[in-house]
Length: 310
Image 1 (cartoon, one colour):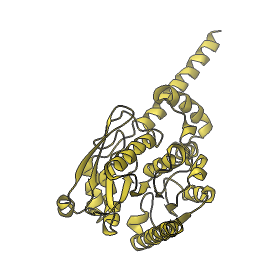
Image 2 (cartoon, rainbow, N blue to C red; image 1 turned 180 degrees about the vertical axis):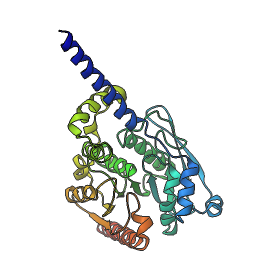
Image 3 (tube, helix red, strand yellow; image 1 turned 90 degrees about the horizontal axis):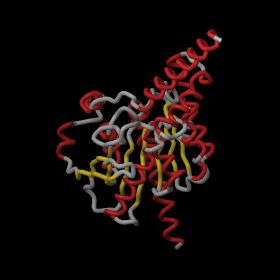
Image 4 (cartoon, rainbow, N blue to C red; image 1 turned 45 degrees about the vertical axis):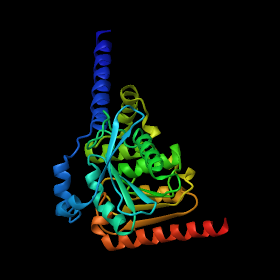
């Protein structure tokens, strides 16, 4: 009996330690400071402080349905109704989106950059890798359409977690944009976590995932399976451009290939030859811009065709 109690105690200790350790790493993942982000972006030639300071930036504060404010900036120098919403990745903030902001500003698009929950200046206690973030994105979309009209032309660009958020929003909540660009998303949170467990901890997912799943549900009220773009990507009606670096060392490029294969209707994929995770643009600037221009041109042609047939 004593041995049984000892074994039970060891088992319960293991479950508790594993459950709290791994869910805490997920929910409270360490974030970079704005200073660290800007230093990296400046070194990469993506951020020019003087140029950014000169831009007229409209402060944005959107109430989240979860009780906090989503903070961002709207850069809208054009009188047209073309808008892009940029969704950054995990651990960073809207400042990481400046390089993409510059791409779209040069192409005549107004741009809204914002901080995901628990990042930058936005509220929120936990990071959910797209689960709660997709609802915040919905709130941002609704705010923008309320301010500038339902008839605006809207695109959403997301990187890493921001790409997952973008796809989940489009596939689970509402297909509310005219097109989407998903740069290096994972296709399924469970498979991504299992992959990272193997790489970082040399642990098989079977020893951790069931326990983490229970604790995640108890602590943050959702399950790992709820964060799965591959389960909803075929619901997205509007065009999607998938982007990934072939040698991505954090989220395998196979994720974007699988998502591309399952997406129905208009779609495009660009697998960059160079670059690690979230570095497709940084390491392949000319090619990235060429693919972006092709995608935007195809959308404009499609919209023109629809207008002529109405």
